[in-house]
Image 1: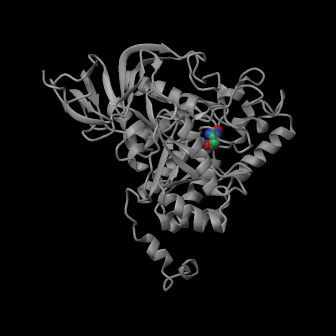
Image 2: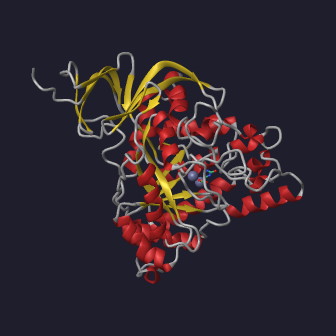
Length: 488
Ligand code: URP
Ligand code: ZN
Ligand code: ZN
């Protein structure tokens, strides 16, 4: 009998991409998708996908794994637990962070985070470099070298006492990114407004978790977005605005994109499915729903769905930032903390895709193609991961096979990260990733994890942007026309 040409054939499913849906078998050779067609010859291993949707594995472009927080707390997950939860939720690629704090050497930071990932990762991964200390050495030596090594995106915070980068230093970072063709991702909220509101609330005894939401006034988002967009426009540097939470924030992004500025933006499930009311629980329970920016209102959820429909927001990431509800995490400042002393962040790697599949595919909001685009194809394209995020011949065989009929009620106990809870406990979702492949290897099947810690692979991302420079930068920086000479 002739030797089969495929290691695996996924047979009889409906393949979904960012632009199409079609009946086809998927032939996998080694780590790669080798063929799409009907009636493919038998593979050495056959997977029956009848009645199922065969979609690209998710690309989660914003998740915090084994990271030291702004307040110096280690988050709950190791690479092993975080990527196990990613795999169970149908995500096969993550972009996490190498987080510099003030005084740290960025090259050492990246080395240290890379060593943790090498040991534990079970899905493929890449890093954004958090720059909190843009010294001359960071900007002139470390950043260029690290970007050349494949760390082609930088993350900067405009808030958080220990991490924030002020406007003048932000311009240095934007300029360095431009010179080395990296993308700059930004947590953009007005720090002064948040600090001022927080101080006044705590002084008056309003310390419960629900006041966290109030302490991030909604105007702090469009203010910071507009300021950031103006700085990025001055430098003509592409930016990605992380976790848009308000209607006004989405409108600021739309305005900038309408003007042709190089602005990308994401939102996250917590802004589509939760509201500030979720923080209003007895005692400290609401801490489990505390993230920054906070969940807002139903009207904001609708505005964000509209912004996704219109293309103003291009990706939906989890912003997985895991802290257990105990003294190692949310309650690390003791048993009676004010909201200012509670770590910000929610677990979300595992629930991102099921929640969105339920809303977008099962309930029909935007549909399969947009689901694939927002959660896999667009993040792969924007962050320069050419082999990821699509079902195409030659692409990595990263595939999640979804049972659209399977209904699951989310519980704390079924999650695989280490926070011990999910903010979505009690919700029932329809549609579940029953089989997950990463580079041609089955890593989740029959509810079991089959991957080995350390089997995830680092994905170097080269510098370079989707869009070409507009010429605006050259005009702004032309010494004959204005002040640009000082910047050369
Ligand atoms: O609350 C959040 N999102 N914590 C993680 C750090 C950040 O702000 O992205
Ligand atoms: Zn953030
Ligand atoms: Zn984040």
